[in-house]
Image 1 (cartoon, rainbow, N blue to C red):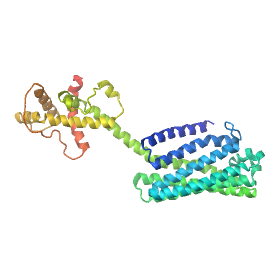
Image 2 (image 1 turned 45 degrees about the vertical axis):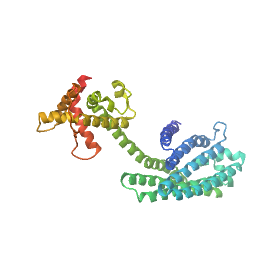
Image 3 (image 1 turned 120 degrees about the vertical axis):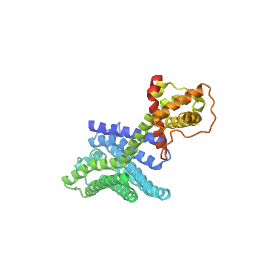
Image 4 (image 1 turned 90 degrees about the vertical axis):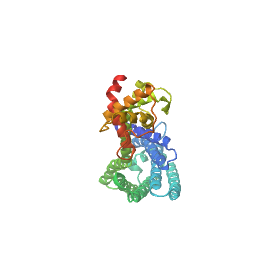
Length: 385
């Protein structure tokens, strides 16, 4: 029971994360589809647990719990087919495939409900336990055999269709995505083998027989690694993306705070250049973890604007006392002198000039120069605060 609760807890956490992604991209069909897979399979787990035990679940008889579980699992499998179809084919072709698979799903679900209704009342409880190896007396009953055969065949076809679509995507994938898709295909292949065993086993029920116990046990044992590899394959790319995004977030947060001494000096002299005029407490600003990218880019722009405004004063100081090198420490001293000169009312006419220009193109190189200049101002700036 504890293991089931852990699995349900993981499913709920995953579902909460997926729903947050859907809220950000509500029109992404693939994201909606894979989220629906998590929803259906997570919701179906309690039903199958109680059905396999042969007890009611909130007033629902075991067999009808089994019906609910299969409907949810098959709906999730259908959503899985949609996910891989929209990943492998263009939107129009994927839409056509989704509609045909939806018709098949409706037919299969209708068949399950009808066959479950025709199961004799005295056999419904044991019929719900056939998948666990119990309910031997239920074998040979046509409606029970048909129920499980149709369900297993549909799941087998859904996983097979998903595997074929994944194979099509693998051909065009590269690097880490290709590796993740291969893991997904391995999981789907394992599930295909497991449900092939289940489909054969349920088909033999028509003749009141079954596969040998080792074969049935092998099918059950394949489920865990199959679903594990599948989930690993579809979550690895998202996890890698999240890790990369986390690194960028951390780098921007550190750079934002490192630029504080430079920004503070320039903002004090040119407050009108601030892109947002609402004052913020320095202490609260240091604790804020939201809007990091927006605040980082805004600070970089404001620092550059301030350096452009003060550049004529810097040019005047450098012309009066030329330096053989423009190291960050020397530039920091000249910047302080230029700001003091402007604050004291000295007027300097001249054209703006580049300050702390990078040797190469790109935003990262530009930010590195600003960080070097801000670090040279850090000791004095820190004491001033």
